[in-house]
Image 1: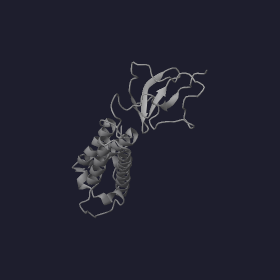
Image 2 (image 1 turned 90 degrees about the horizontal axis):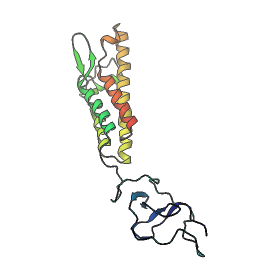
Image 3 (image 1 turned 120 degrees about the vertical axis):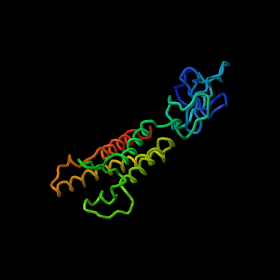
Length: 216
């Protein structure tokens, strides 16, 4: 008689769909609908499955592999949830930095400082624009930062995708602004360092943080 190899088998205690067999005893890891949790084995000996008999113990024809691979678990003694618990603090911090950029200086000269709400969004594609619809660079950054913040709080796959889009958008806003400001400085024969504020870098740093964090 040969011992069964480690693997997932129907829970002999009937409490879950599958329970992990270590090769010598039933383990505490169980799986329901593809998610694993911990449910300690009862003190009473489990149903015999440590050795094969004349009728081999049931083993799926195709090896069963839950979505959350063993031995990762999402909870202890509690039903699993499709959304991760808590707040993704790295994403949250990145979104906060990007949101603050709207209030910081995007253009900073010796005489004045311009925040994001005073720069028209059209400037991102045309430095010569005189068009001002009230839709500002600061508002764009604030909306994208709010979307990233939502991804940090509601940690679900769809929200993580939203966070990636928001992070990419924030990086694009910062980079496009720097490019257009450089073109403006070059056309005006002014040093770039005499115009550029800290806000574009805050937007870029916040966006990159959101992208790297991936909802965490």
